[in-house]
Amino acid sequence: MLLVLPLLLAACRADETVSAYVGPQAVYRLVEINGMPFAGRATIRFPEEGRVTGRGPCNSFTASQSAPYPRFRLGPLAATRALCPEVSAERAYFAALAGMSEAELMGGVLILRNDAGEEMVFQAEGAE
Image 1 (cartoon, one colour):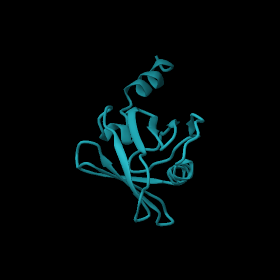
Image 2 (image 1 turned 30 degrees about the horizontal axis):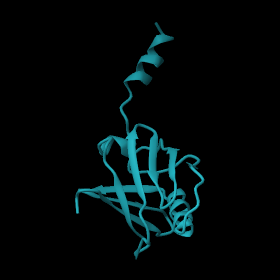
Image 3 (image 1 turned 30 degrees about the vertical axis):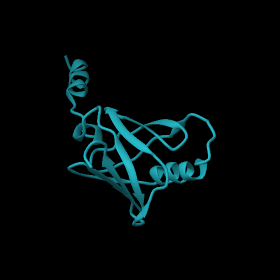
Image 4 (image 1 turned 120 degrees about the horizontal axis):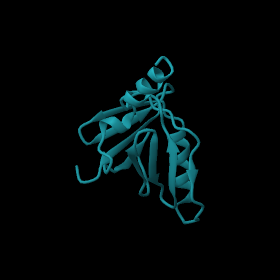
């Protein structure tokens, strides 16, 4: 019985990541980085516990995310490798995203920030 208890407790653990606070179909579009409008289309989704997906201006990406809300920490980001004219905007998006450490959800707005004062603002699609 003592061996089974830890397994049962792990199975009952509720999702504490950002995923628990947004719907699995919710898509957030990046509108600004550090107060500047983002040139290009980039999105982020939280389709299930521990998983983040989205799209930069050129490529789709996926990463793990296990920090409990409001903390935010991505695992290694894996992206497709297509080239497009907006590749520099995509690099800026991916680099900023990798550096975020905190999330805040307010209605249809998702704000990611870090201790250095950098901030990314996303708007839920369909909530404009």
